[in-house]
Length: 183
Image 1 (cartoon, rainbow, N blue to C red):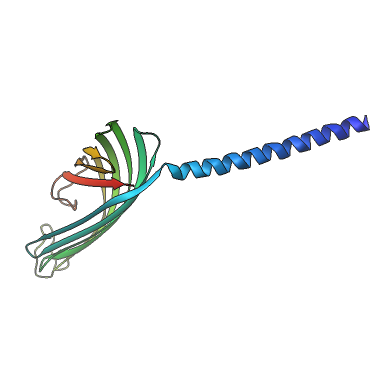
Image 2: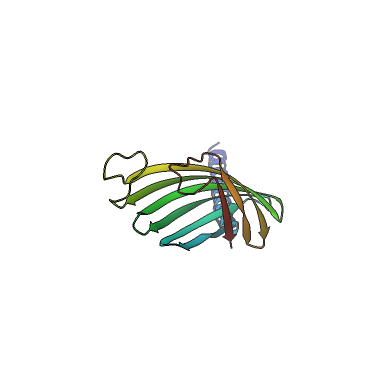
């Protein structure tokens, strides 16, 4: 009886070690497979006009589940300046989902949360402001639905902000063109 208990204990011990080592190999394989499907990219924007400058840097990363679906996260930083009128700093994050109907047509949904800080010049009259200090700092959400044409790692298209607020948005209208790239 004592030998049977020892044999049973040894079998349990060896099977636990074997199971643990198989889990370790699977976890290592799974970890290396994860990074195989991650792509990095984003967008860069520069805009110049009549005493106006705007620059945006928006890196992002997506996880491609397959050739059809992908999801990801991004960050956004923007600086705007209209000489003698205002300057603004915008910081934000976003989550996005991509759906490739066919390899050339990409549909997207993106939620963006931005912190906007606008500093107006003292001589400017801001609508709805009754003091000389009309600077603004606030959070602004955006929910975008978009469609774009894809060729290789680049997608160009247009997106629509369904939560658009003309008084708080950093964009002039709810339709925004975009260029995305992922490598």
